[in-house]
Image 1: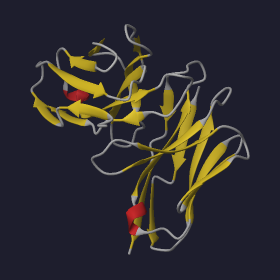
Image 2 (image 1 turned 90 degrees about the horizontal axis):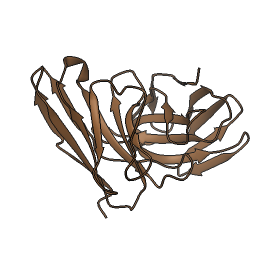
Image 3 (image 1 turned 180 degrees about the vertical axis):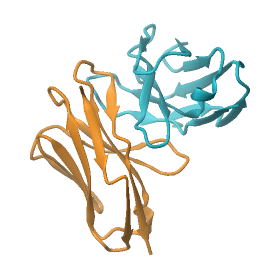
Image 4 (image 1 turned 90 degrees about the vertical axis):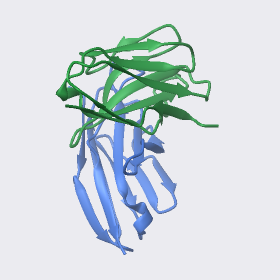
Length: 113
Length: 111
């Protein structure tokens, strides 16, 4: 049981480049989330998917797009990376019933030059 | 505005020196308060959920308590392996899916 997995673990981009962060969970969870974590700040929600086939904006969605590919996979795409998107990105999942325990992946450390 | 504030930002203790971390919140209709532990370079790991004022939960050297305005994470006789950043979060007042997170308290336990 791998839990929540994320790829890649590290990435360096130049301004304007695009990339997709991948996330998968094997816990049969309904809801999935993308967060970013910056020094001195709490985790901030970028997008979430309450269930397969739905996605919604979180607190900081600008500059990002997401795809809920199936129940297991939820990807985050940066179409034109900016230095302000340098951060650590975490994917999480929950069963989706009320506000329940979130299970996190190991994170992707992204640097945009 | 819903808000979560953690204090102190960092706490250095000697091994065996007990202390408490604070998480204060303002949210309409609290539907739970979560504590997580985060080790360097890793994702947050769930510790506790508290649902109502007066509730307490324990795990090894950690005990979490909840009042109507804040939560405390008490650490009794800590060991170096308790060193981590401790995060708290509450559900956003208007959503079942969005959590509001504090910035965390970095705890360092010196041997």
